[in-house]
Length: 403
Image 1 (cartoon, rainbow, N blue to C red):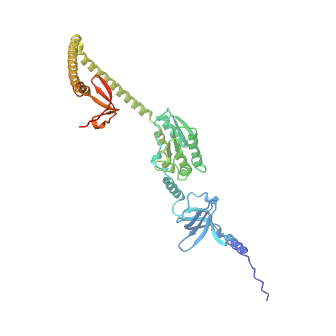
Image 2: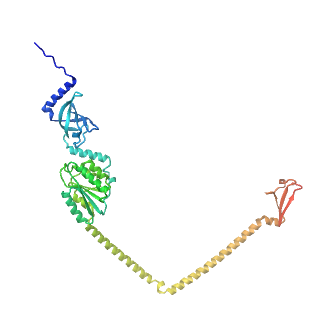
Image 3: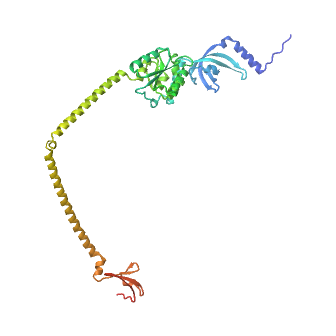
């Protein structure tokens, strides 16, 4: 009986054959897998590599960059996910793995996770810090509005601004507020207003909608554009209960677009009322000042100086004469006292003066510049000068006799 020889495979042939078997199984072409992410790694190319595991098993998985770019959240180790993909084998390594087409968090929506992840990230960077909030100008000349040109929000904003503060110019930059590219368009609009200094305050927002409809205002590109804006930004997204990342970064959050318009400008009616109140206060203050000064003038008019100025002048003249005489007396007394003091000092000076001593028959002897007081300080032959009353004598020592 003839027995055919068994086929001998190369490793590459075996791996490719196994790959063909896996890919030909309809159950493995489009399947859902649930598990927990581990060994997660995001490659610089955009591909995502990970292991999906449960309590007893694990499988390697990869998500290529094209599919990964569509994710609304950032995968993390320990996150439980629901995966839609295909099972195949990578012939080079001989390992079979899960190729992920789409992935969603299991139990919590991808948008909710993406919202919390971005909120945590931006908060840690300080984008929500109150110290970065810019004040809204009290009297803006131009109000910039970034929203859809066809939505109800733009009509509400125009109505409120026109009623409250018609003096302000409204500058509208229509923007896409939902769908692909909306976030980039909103961010670009904010940048354009800043480049051209197109407004004193910006209202950025839209009317209500689903989480998906409002999602453009939860994108990082919008948050950073709001944070970097030199023009103060009022965020007005959705209804009162809707909160977006844009609300946290903005300088002021308004619950609705209409409320944003009210916060952006003052109310003319209130300003007129305040001006009227200030006017009344000013008039009342001026009247009080005039009344007080009139009373003061009347009081001055009743004084004796104005009623009988001659008498007051004579009184002042007599007072001036008295003070002049007193000043002369004090001056004369001071001069006499100084003379007596001077005479006493002169007397003391004359008593102590060496000239007075010389006048009484004494002399002062110098040897060179030195004053001599002892005979032993002289030697025979020394030249000396003798100060006498009325002059000086120069002499030579011929003999020194000490006592």
